[in-house]
Image (cartoon, rainbow, N blue to C red):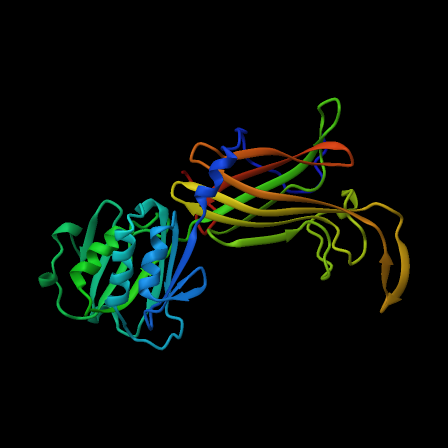
Length: 341
């Protein structure tokens, strides 16, 4: 077997794909809150709190992001945050199905605030003193603006813990900072290969891998693009063409945490020249060609449960040959270190 490229995959056990009929249950809706105004957006559409409550009743999983859209506020009110968290609680969305990312820093100095740090074990540290969240009362607060954060950037946040704190704060408190930032990265590795009549494997193009924040999109082509960048020796790739056609294999993948599972969706596109190209003209020393291209589209929609690292699945034949796609995932911190699931 010959690897075409310089990147190799580091995954091991190959397991069967989950039941594809269950994939629809792993959709994730996005909720954004403008912490300056309390305005809410459901999948990028502005909604009233009343409409938000109805939409949450039908939501299977939520990615909740809050930020200061204008950046002008020195503090934010706890009212809108409390109301929304109460709505998620009323919709009975399980905490493990809600990804919380709240980021806000006002102009108040830490020393002029009550400082609350939440821990995954249900503890909260108030101004250096550790207590159970259930034991936190409004009388323990000084009445100053409150700074709220989470103890780890590499653990999911239980939104009901934050709700418990917001209930103590009430709707009239001012929050000077919020820091609930999930900095886990999802590394996705992929390769597409053919299997000939003898069962031998032939990789069609260089294996591809990329790390990016959860819920982020990654796009990468493994051939030379308009800027002339070549991630590997393109001359060894059957799908490469020395021009601006952007032929080859390209991936566009979205990654998400949905509870304990990892949801990968996107598409891989294979473009290959199928006839001799004909030069049409040259512009500033760059030749432009006419050519015929075959195109293979591989939609990707996979759920990796905690016991699954790698999934292989069959795709449309390429040049009449059985073709497979292999996708692997792992969780990393923002420095590329492995985080065990």
